[in-house]
Image 1 (tube, helix red, strand yellow):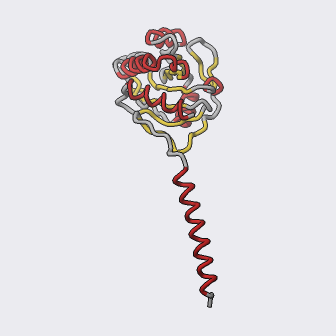
Image 2: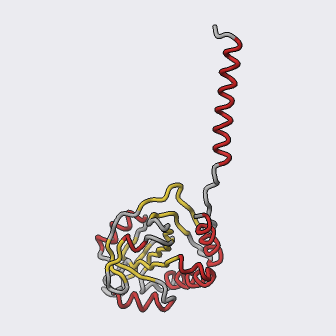
Image 3: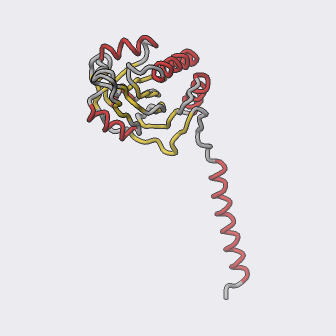
Length: 204
């Protein structure tokens, strides 16, 4: 049988441990939140890859290091969603002001058959000279899609060249360590997204 003084000592010690654990939880900074979408509890590393940029040069994971990136999946022949989203991102860039240099928008084309580097450059630079565009062959796109969690599918049209591309609509948020930090989901609002990015940059 445990003597009463020893029991009290054990209870006191247990109370101290519980108190310390509670203090750690209460004092731990709250995880960052965004109103435009969802942040991952733990950022997901992006594996190395090689795509082709709108300048015709290789675009690799290393190009994602050092600043925040918003990757938007689409294609230049998209009739509505893609140009609307890029216009919203242009407005977001304007609202960021001086902080816009800390956020890179990347348009990822899933239509390499038609979207040549020259066409991609002309398309994204219409919205902003600061935007970049990349693409790759099907194998490269499929591998990157698995890593970044986007999907796409070719939808046949009336002629071989009039097909369309179904694709994910969410923006992929990449942190300066080249990790997937979260996803921005439609409807995308420029003001809310700019505020979220400012908060994320300030938190870091």
